[in-house]
Picture 1 (tube, protein in one colour):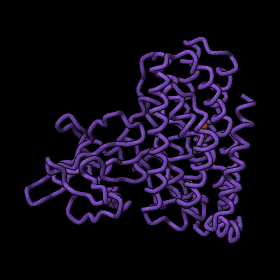
Picture 2 (cartoon, helix red, strand yellow):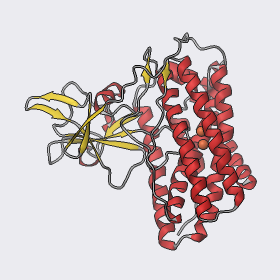
Picture 3 (cartoon, protein in one colour):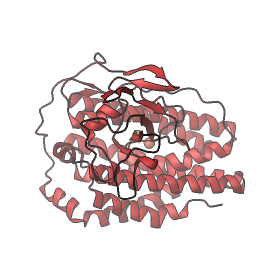
Picture 4 (cartoon, helix red, strand yellow):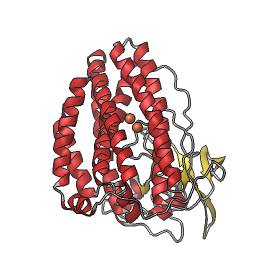
Amino acid sequence: MRHEERRISAIFQRAILLAMAAPTLAACADAGSVGPPSTSPPGTVGDAGSDATTTQSIDGGLAFDGGLHVDDGGICASHLIASEPVDTCGNYVRLPCGVPQGVVPRDNCYFEINDCASICPDTYFNCHAIGDSCLDGGAIVADDAGGVTVDCAICLTGVGRIPAGLASGAVAVAFVHPSPVGAYFARASHFEAASVHAFRRLRRELAQHAAPPRLLRAARRAERDEARHARLTARAARRFGAAPITPRVHPVAARALDAVALENAVEGCVRETFGALVLHVQAAAAGDRAVATMLAEVARDETRHAALSWSVAAWASPRVDAASRARIAAACAVAIAELRRGVDAAASIAPDAELARVTGLPSREVSHILLNVLEADLFATLPRA
Ligand SMILES: [Fe+2]
Ligand SMILES: [Fe+2]
């Protein structure tokens, strides 16, 4: 584990040095002056006002408030649909009558973040048309059935693992004053709390498959870390006027080792590892002293979690068959591609200046540099078939 942590830390250092040389981050760091935020804390909120908006079942899907659109032909009810293959980072929404009136898509099949609020269930970070609804040139069109399918991305990098069984669509952020910074931390806290479940389950499943005690101990420590992260980010959310909603995670039946290894590779070796690196960059660039200190603490923990993921992968890989290793490698390739799309998605939406300043969120250019280094130096060492 120590060996993996040192290896990953060395790669992170190279990536961060390259990223710091990028004009956008350098400029930010120069101005950066770590200091108090310009937004005055609007106070704290409780769960009152939380808007669990899922309401009724339509055509086997879930309709939700805000998902009803009046069109020429009458009322169209958007609904959640299952993704195939399963996408743990997206809620797929079907708009049976196409793009709602008044919604103007941006380039690359993405919608404005405000329009995502009317299209998506209440947890999302961006949304974009997919499949036949998105032409190669980036235009959104109705598909053969006359509708549009939208992927409402629910994963936020840097916030840990998404556990199987995480309830989607019925989680929300309660606002006193709409604040992008508060929303960011409330969503982060939601997923940090979900990561507690992910590591608790990982520990139990590792025990069931007779993994060495050092991995079980590390998973237990990571579970405690994630609970602390959830509290830290919830505190930050409340400071900026928002509050997280506790995640609901449905029970998952005992899984075979190949399923555990696949989830670990995608959620841990790819997503959590990239998230840890992004957090280091954010900690260096955040323009708010308290936020920078918190992000640095979380980044250190997340680097250790990344090392745990890679140690679990090294232990599990020889214990699953070649077909499973091929499936895991393919799933990782999809997850890496999804990270790239996510980076581009974030860039296609006009960034909120205060959010970028307070949290040090990296630009698209910096994010691609980080991903490039990870792909070349780390992801290339993922176990293969
Ligand atoms: Fe983590
Ligand atoms: Fe975390």
